[in-house]
Image (cartoon, rainbow, N blue to C red):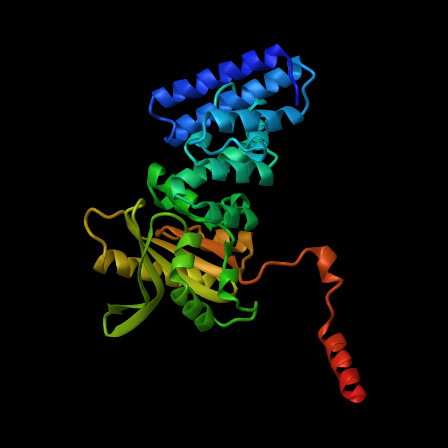
Length: 341
């Protein structure tokens, strides 16, 4: 591919920028790398607007950059195209790399711009990725499970039972629904089956709960008077600095569940809470809930409680549902095969 002298001059300028970044000894630092990519994307867009160059210039640029900087990865044609798209995505609102974006690796950034079309939503996931410490695979998993929507729908009484700062952090910690499809259980699974699965897949469960949860125990005993009670799942949250009591229910939420949770929280605060700990928080996980009913159940409770739903299997897209055979159809097909045999 033959280009005019303006390309050569521009290429020399790009080399100078890259060499400058190398001299600062920060090219390996993620934020510096993304600043470099931002400038590179900006230059590519600008030059393509000012000249008649099409996307074919990316192939030539890739060849020249890799020859000039053989020790630096990331100058493939495919990555240069991604850099340009990434720049265009955020440049519609920002003059420089947004801070949440600069805090996460390039692989995460590429994933976000391929899965998300809204800048504000991408910034939300970038910030959560940094805060939660998600790997690229974990970020992809949260995108598939629609993590953003799950942050908005839990019913809690945190604003009336916790100090303002603690209340806000607790609200950000609790989500709805929680996705338990990693258990491989059907929707009619019993509470004990779900508990067994969560304990067996505790690492995956901790990822689903979010950053800061530390597992204390399952069916954790608390002695009250002459009776021993058992908490389904007990955690300690390192950022909230408090115990998290989780109760699992395999059906729809019932108001009496809130009273029992209030009872458990009183016991934990009395017997286990350290003087430096914050008030313990309860989380009731149900298959379904009526939000108005749940709000009424929590209205006069004096302990902080959240009520969320969980899913055991992801719903299939509607276009696939109709194409799947029913149980009767499968049985008829098997019967017909038996007759042929």
